Length: 543
Image (cartoon, rainbow, N blue to C red; front, side, top):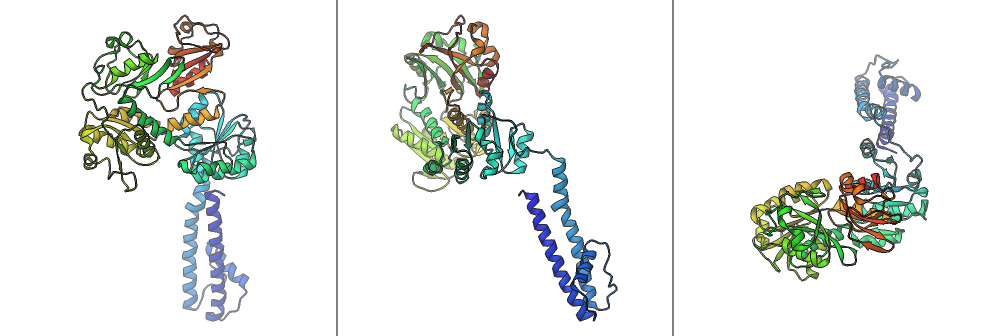
């Protein structure tokens, strides 16, 4: 029952109740004050005539003041109820008749993914599924939200994912998987319902609190994902790798061949130069296949683009080559070999970051609004006084693990003003906030929505090889049947998609020397690096 139907029922019950009360009062009033004995049915008729303004009763006029007062009150009540019916019933009904009609069931879908229901992470998941050509349907219980999603172009139905009828209308039995991505308690209910409707369909549940994962498994979830700890550990790894030559999250493509993201630290000798003048190829032997400039990814990067402290290089090479480049990206002006790190926010992400730093033996000061175990400084991190009390002047790095993007952006501006040389590593909820964070002065930013979407998609797409989850670029290993027989030069992969072919897996071996003359053969799997949008274009045009 939707909101309009509930309103109609409540209004109807109230109307009948009010009319019944007035009929009783009128029936007894005519006997006591007018001396006329009438049936209750006649009294009810008079009340209906009054409320509907079709007449004021066959008994008019009344002699007693009491009955005239009762009739006046009935008149006013009837008018009020009529005007109440307009906004409560008539206007919503008219709006529903004129508004977009959201489907209530799927139509001719097969091997699709059922997503319950829409969250901030859904965009990233849908982008991943679209890039692989996988159908999906969002099951949204709120009619207004379902209408908004439908008008924005999402495949959505208006149904309750916690009910068997809702999942049956999503044709769960024909789906490849179900994703429950909402509040933890609601997700557990959805998992139980999915087991009742189609127990053979894999169920993936995304939990906010990792401690609740066992209950979701007991409910029947095949995979229980917790993106927040992964994101927190990834943010901490940016600190641990920047104080050493360890490459941390470099992705191994083949034997002694890796791809890595390396941010330029403030004070690096590369800052202020251009790619063409930096001599990275000669000095480190690496191949720069892309770069992030103020949150914008370029592949291939402009050789004349100026490298700044916010630039993140996407490079390939052997481990020792990447190690040499890592030394070039590190700060020469202000070396904090084991300097203090501030962790701002002590939720799931902040706790994971602080734990990873502790495991690495790096000291950290935790800031949070609430006083609880593990928090060193209690206060608002967007206030200068709080940051100064935590030691921002001597901090090497700050990890912003706040749940609100606006607060994170403002805190970045305050940190930049107080300590321009301190490294700012931040988490944001929405992917759309990444560019604003770079403009605010952050050195490295990861979106929870992007990490979550990739994590869910890599679990759903078991047959596909998604190599990177917690990086700004996506690295996949995939077949490209449309490119068979063409050389990389002829395929124009970069021109058409913005992606780069990093390596070719052929007959169980990985070919990393992929020049323009390499010809794609039947059965080859290409290792592709690019943004989520670039990977989607690759799969649509060349996959």
